[in-house]
Length: 404
Image (cartoon, rainbow, N blue to C red; front, side):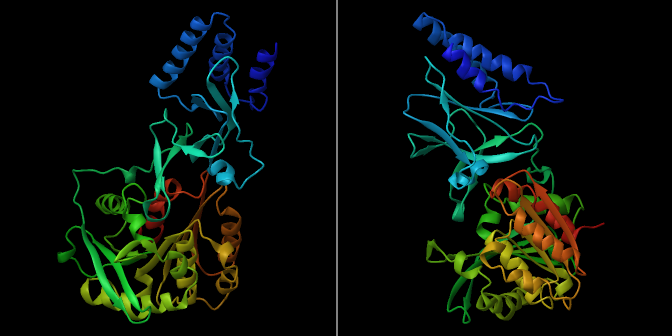
């Protein structure tokens, strides 16, 4: 009786209005039936077949409609799941502890998410051992400098941006790697990379986007932005543009990442852009020296910096791409952006809705709505992750450089 009650509790939070959960209930019910088989050998055999069938169909985690059963098979004292859905442990309201199905070595956590959500997570064994989900082939890399992979929950209506897919039948741009600039303003060297569209040699001067956290935006496992640029330009969804990817890692010690120092509304870093980096780019590459054709882009602290650069110096940056901005670290940014004297500019801002920056971003959206800005704002059912940001790069570039 206790076993039946325990399994039934797994369904309490199901939202059944207008959605068919029969396959979800039936599949979990099968596990319940197998768990009470008295013959231990038969019980183990049936449970293994049940788990293997889900594995073969790539259904772990098991998802139906908006309901999810996270599953882990193995010996442990405790099993929980941590990820975007609980702010990686900061959101204590989310119940993330799994339940062991009696008479089995299977642990389960049931929850519900929007049907178009995409979330990073890891399994936590015995309260401290974070592992990738061994049954889930989907992974998303995250973290400063590339970090490490997380497992990825993809809900039924989530779709990958088609611009993230590499096509060999289109023309590809050129990437100039690891260019050094000796900054007198900063007192150290900075590395950057430059993307130039296919056939740029025969073009007139072109617009440019300056990308903070450039190493991560470039990395295929993270931003994969070169692929996005190639696709958008080939499809004529954006104008041919140049992209300057600034690397915050120290050139001689790549483990020393200065992003938290450089991207915290750092006036010296802004001066470096205006007085050293941009002049060098415009001297060496065919980019238009006009603020209306020059954008700054970044995510998290880089999103804060993009906002700061554009609104502090609209005479330099006429466009800003802002992803999950860390406005909470520098609330004075709101006052800066509230200046009615700011000239009109283009702004494209995005945020996740699940333990991301939607509260702060909505506050900024209201400020932009009251200004003369041409702005676009998008929210997605995702967390503070490169899985979120990479999928929206194309939208931002179309907002800022679109051909229509």
